[in-house]
Length: 286
Length: 335
Image 1 (cartoon, each protein chain N blue to C red):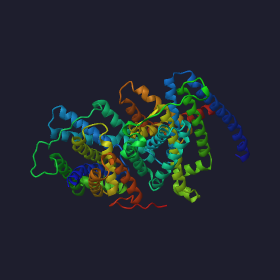
Image 2 (cartoon, rainbow over the protein chains, first blue to last red):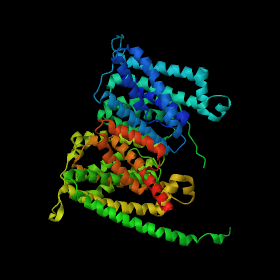
Image 3 (cartoon, rainbow over the protein chains, first blue to last red):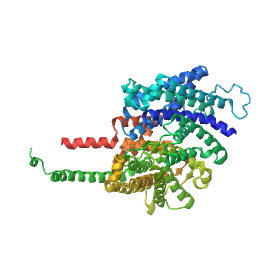
Image 4 (spheres, one colour):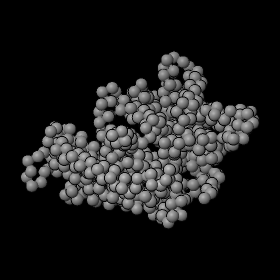
């Protein structure tokens, strides 16, 4: 029971990363390999802000804003000119970004592990036999975030415009939506979601330039499992992966092969059902 | 203008090609002689570095066959490099087999592994394949540490092996001998590679990359070619890995992490995609640039790698090899 619940807690983090990946995929058909490192970098910024004396929630808000700006800038400056070139070029540029973020973080903040505070550790929640306060808090934050995103994309004009731009760029442009900026906003949002996930997970696994590699892998697995073109599916997929990882890690294979679970899951899903559980099957015309 | 105004194309190309080919063969021979003489002018440590460069060159050629020529993106070739290295180490340490026998064995093991990984990869295109191989690269160190195979792999500690001495009582150090051995292996591998890529197979690979549907319509068995390419590419990488294990005398899980796979990617991008000579330039780059950048900071080599990756994609998508070819073509035209 404990394993399932704490699986849900980590699953929420995977769900956030998966959601960030899906948002970028939907808008541009690209898989952002640098998503995890961007989140890690933002988390370091949050750490610096907190060390600098800001209260936790102040640093939290500031980090989300900074991550948003970083995402927008990356889209406008680096991704825009390359997006129409070959897939290989795009993958190489993403890997380049990943490497730069990783090494610059190591350069600025060194490679030693750092503890990251949690706003929930002091609060006592009654009846939490199975979960730590941080796990419950992280889960709540993830749920609030998902709800906010749902409302944003469903009911606000900007959210609808972003969806339209992703769904049908040409027609959107005809009705006056600035498609380019919508893509940049999508990147910003994805980066912000990633930053929140990074800040939630950093308390559990400590802050380190390589902390997100495994998480990103699980995020991919979750996104693929749920269907990479379906945001809700990706969230569910993230939760499933989180629970599966925890239960399997505890009872079946032990902790030292956890990453291989993600590998098997990714290859398995891609081979057996590439569209995922909830995705649309794509038919390529010859 | 009548058709007679044009010189006979046959005569023209033959006249142009022949000196070019003579130059090329002569140039390669000179380079090869220089490469074999190299260890006698430099220290053992430098020789060791060049041996590693040769290992990387073989590996990069393998990755280039897959990614550059066939268009299948692999971010996971560090895994095959690891399989090759571990095959060599296990054969020498556990079974006391001679070092030279490990090279073909590592190649064959990787051919099998690559072919098997290539089968599911058939259904994956572009980004998805990149994703699956990315996962492979990230999971590799963990799999190598797995307790169930610890008595083979030595677990976290890895395996220490002994550097082979020069045979026949040759009066050269083991480092220099290993360099010459690696160079000989590399020459064989490159000649084979050029043979594969020049002929019918090479054309099929490029056709699959540029237009899979058209290639299939022309009678190319895309599924077989793609998975075989994966196997052959892994074979090259495995040979490179086995040689590197001999040179370093040590294998351990953490040297085969995700970043090894990325440095191979850096190598083919910088050296030149879909180019045989690009493998050599790329190998020199990934072996020596980090040493230079290391003086700045521990993290600097990777920042440099990242910047180079992006910059090359923007400004020089054909890599060093492509740029040199362009300069050479311009030089020929002005003469």
